Image 1 (tube, rainbow, N blue to C red):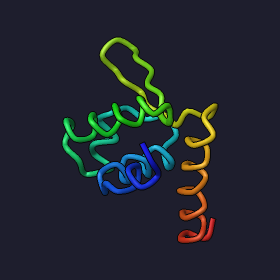
Image 2: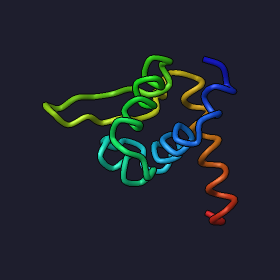
Image 3: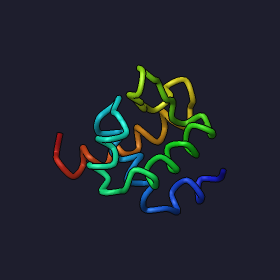
Amino acid sequence: MSVEEIFSSKGRVKVLKVLAEKGEVNISEITRKAALNHTTAAAHLRKLCELGIVEEKRFGRIRIFRFKKEDARGWAIQSLFESFSKRVYGA
């Protein structure tokens, strides 16, 4: 998947933004914060996991997602979102 494909979907960008803001987060919180339904959020997360940008941890039925820090692209995307939030909020 190219950069254009990663950022071409508003839903996927919302998911990435939530991950950047929260660090590790379960799918229920992602759907709530990103204002997406479960199926849509799950599809975006599945694609991001396939790319190796995001990783999933399972604890029984609970699914936790986070940027994969070992992947340079995941780290760069998280840093991008963090830099925008710092500018907007002056943090």
